Amino acid sequence: MKWDGHSHTELCRHGKQESTKKMIEQALALGFTHYSLTEHAPLPEGVAPKGRQAEFALLEEEMEAYFTLAEQLKQDFQGRIEVLVGLEVDFLHAHQAYTTELLHQYGPRLDDAILSMHYMPGAIPYAMIDYSPEITRQDLLAHYGTVEAYHQAYWNAFQQMLTADLGPFKPKRIGHAGIIYKFCQKLDFGAFLEPSLSFFEQIGYLLKQGGYSLDDNFAGASYPLCRRPYLPKALRQLAEELSIPLVYGSDAHGIDAVKKSNEAYEAFCQHGRIRPRRPECGPPTSPG
Ligand SMILES: [Zn+2]
Ligand SMILES: [Zn+2]
Image (cartoon, rainbow, N blue to C red):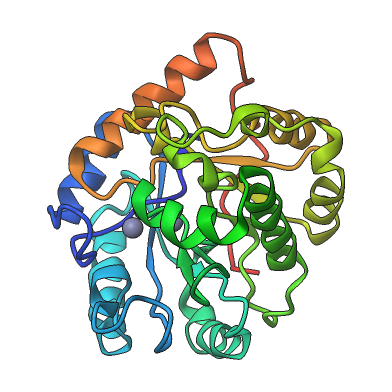
């Protein structure tokens, strides 16, 4: 099997709003057998910048339209590529009841789901980790004072995401671990760019214990301010040692990215820096 486990749709307003059907056709042409639609799940008030909620995630009132689109595509492509109806759900440190309720409501209808962290506490309660280098400097680096403190806070919050009780539909795959490195060509992480194996010891243990897999997200690899996979080397190695499945994710927000991320991933695999995905990391038949 060849699985793209992370993609967005024409309903995403910060994406290219290109035809989702064409994105899936692109994946099909590249030989993918499985393709997860993981649109950004709705956010509660007070997370996205005021008045800009629709830019970041689906609105609650758009969920039915999303399911209609996703379920239709699943049907249209049946027998050619398995389209999984999923969501990318945000971990929100101070809104866990909201997320639990959202998962309770939509979980039964999902084939797949990802739990991601795009926000963490900083100068504001939900500072954006991956929006722009300027926002990161202003709301996170300046707040924590040093790269070291910011970096540590990110992985602490990440650990909190792993242990959070979000109910029976809590996603089993963790989105883009290491998205903190998205602007690494512009923000100097120094030695923190590749932490040691021992730095991730507790995280590896929690991933294994929780039965999680990792989104091996390659959106950063073709992004000029990043030019690397988000997953740090040591965490990749630890996942390999602990048999924590890695699931490739293009995180495509348009047709071209389906191809670009795949190219970057294949080049990365060919250079022998990672082994190809293990066959046992198939999509779950049910979430959670
Ligand atoms: Zn997005
Ligand atoms: Zn994401």
